[in-house]
Length: 140
Image 1: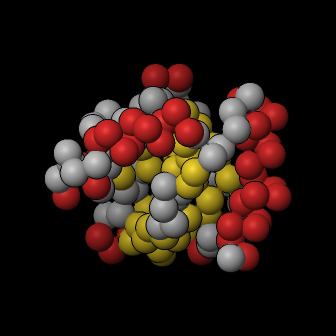
Image 2: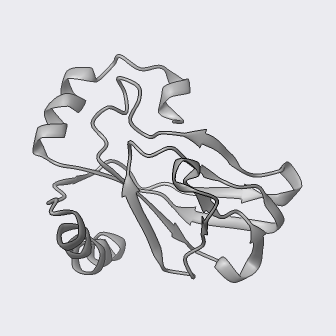
Image 3: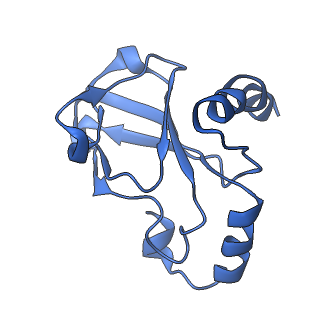
């Protein structure tokens, strides 16, 4: 409940202001762990390219422990080599259609909260596509 309230009062108004997009739905609450011992990273990908993810409009990466790891930055290779690393509690919000990557964590463990946002029109797409994706797409 507190997480939903924080998103609703702090983050969603900024998404509306920056992107002129009114978030109607949050797909899920997921916390990912990228561990340096496992070479933790997420390969370059887009978040909306399968039937099971086509409804996603915006992705968000919120670092939960930015001071406790090295590496693990976000990159958008189509736009240059710059990396992004929000502070603990800070967010990077971006279109799900952008190619992005979480680079390898080289020390420690990175924990990140990773919700996806969509609106009523996209909810219709999600409903139409329910059951059309497999477990591999669910991880996209």
